[in-house]
Amino acid sequence: MARPRFHLAFPVDDLTAARAFYGDLMGCAEGRSSENWVDFDLFDHQIVAHLAPEECASVKAGAVDGKQVPVRHFGLLLDWADWEALAARFEAAGTDFIIEPYVRFKGEAGEQGTFFVRDPAGNALEFKSFRDEAQIFAR
Image (cartoon, rainbow, N blue to C red; front, side, top):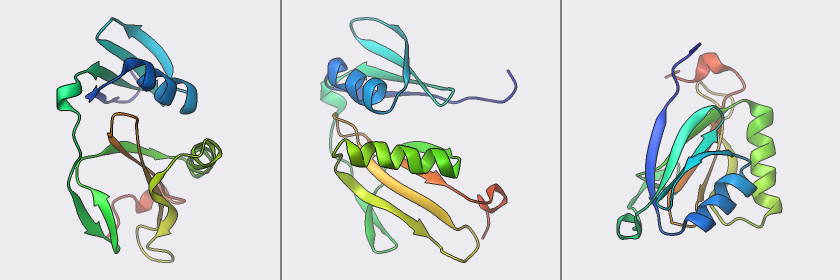
């Protein structure tokens, strides 16, 4: 393994809807599955949608840059071109953004593109990009 990869398991209330969102819309290849879970390849990271409707609930939000950011969320840091392409894919699909794509800290340390969406089960996802990866942890 050239670099560590993360594994994340999360609840969904409908595996068909999860397959449509992660597989069809986001383009994540499907791996193993059962009647209760599905593995997806999220940019070389393993995520697993587990059928657990009782675990799907709305999450609290906190103020960041004057926007309400879901406190519990997951996502990726992407190359800028991949970030733009994914944002365009969500826009073309008519996805309701929690926070539409925008650039934070423009011209400052840590400048980054970001946007938030929800999957069909209500899980919040954030996708970020830095034009300069050396700025990921800049203060």
